[in-house]
Image 1 (cartoon, rainbow, N blue to C red):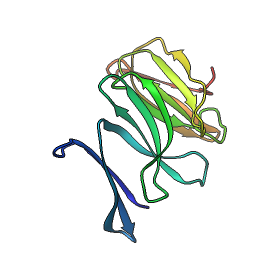
Image 2: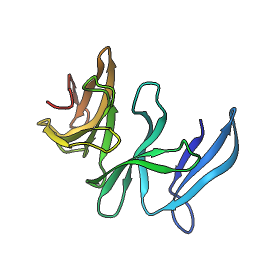
Image 3: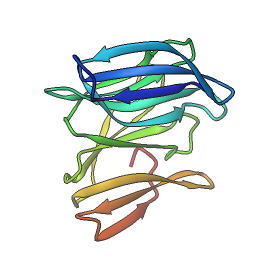
Length: 170
């Protein structure tokens, strides 16, 4: 697989993404590069279907809001596959197969807040539902299970945690 690199210390524009060609373990060439106005946080590799192609997932923090994006690198260029705007700046996310369905769900949260937002990662995006966990969330993580994923929530400053059977709908 090729290497996707996001950097924040460039001149004259600080934010840049670079796609590098991986040829049997050797980085051979830069195949795409672009400057951006926003910084990428929480980049991760995601597959929408088991055995399907990989996408780069991450949150791009702008001046006013944050945007979650899935980016497709399969064509040798960085192309946006899915975009979910309107998130609070500084938002974080975790992805799992909470409902046990083929397409995973993405959970958005603001560290220190108790509410989470959930949507299924489908080609056109989906409805976003909001849930209140009743305690301030420090971090969320998907924990693999036999039937998909469970949700691990760390609360407060990390002094308590709970594992939830969460189906993405209730």
